[in-house]
Length: 475
Image (cartoon, rainbow, N blue to C red; front, side):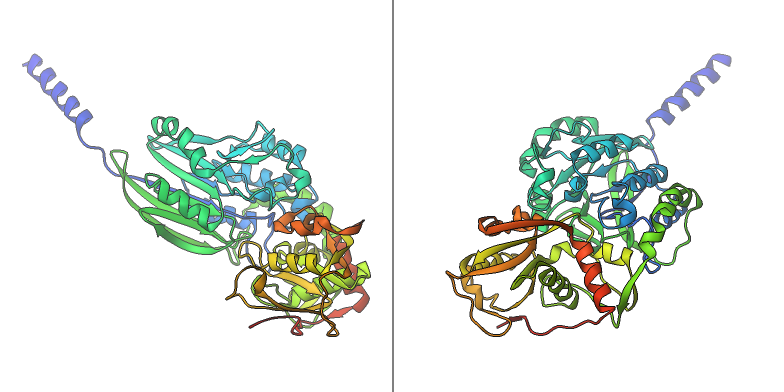
């Protein structure tokens, strides 16, 4: 009888070991393009607020898809240190190298990566920074998640050349092919956290359909999850305005269900622990950020597709300071809007957060035309201009898209004539594809920060108002 009981117990134990496991539910929370928006702006965003939402969900993985840095004085004055400290405390499992991770220089990036308690990934970047990892593997509830990072192949055009020595962006598909065999053997489920152009993202998803989940970033679109074939792509917009949630269900370590959604970060209470991490940094910069430099009679926003009030304001400020006939600025460098009411120094900083300096030079009419046509490329965005009137026709191709170009008072731009132009050091170095500017003459770098130029312009007028005047038009 005793032997029979033991035999029965063994049979039951064996049956229990071989019985199918129940479903495993995994919650992933994700962010992208935080851009140093550590504190909420107009009740939206903020890392302490993101932490509150994350804490309430008790996720299994917290992931970021790049551009953690650059965009606010609070982040930039400390070269991203408060951002990393807050993300450490929140509990991120990994991050991704975006183009703006290089904005503070490679030494600062190296320090931030050493500060991070989570790996920051890019499988297709060759850099002198050994702290950048290609992928990581995290085991949650018995499931091994392989997380691979990718950075846009266009990273060098989207970052200041002075910060990109020794950096090479390799083909994303070939880079993934090289490491996929080892990642497959180490993982049960692979996730791509990618900072890519839309076309690159699509190519990645189509080439590797086995990678069923892509956490994306870079284009600042706030998209509820969408599908490329059998791959879900999830991205949250910009500046912490949303946080993403993806729910996965596995049976025997095989994915059986996947759903995602966006959660707005609006008027959310701050997580006290994260607020405490940030407080010492905030105290040190609050006085300068709060200084009022003028007043706006209405909201001023910028657009990459049409003439816009803020782009006009910025270009006019540059031309006035440079004392030139014309000014050119990349609208991709305008990172925030100015809202109606008092305008603070911190608000102007967020409009022009990069540490670029005002440059004057001379261009021929031909060089000027080539530079303006560059801005019609979708990935670049329409240029901000002052001192000229430009008419484009997007239905045409190449140089024919520029239908007419005159000075503001109506005189046509002549191909061989020289014109004085104000721009900045990023574009002079070929940033955003403005390579023609390097062929200019009489180049002078003023060493004046762009945001200081705009602050001075607003202070001089005291009141600014949104206005467009037809300086850019389309057939």
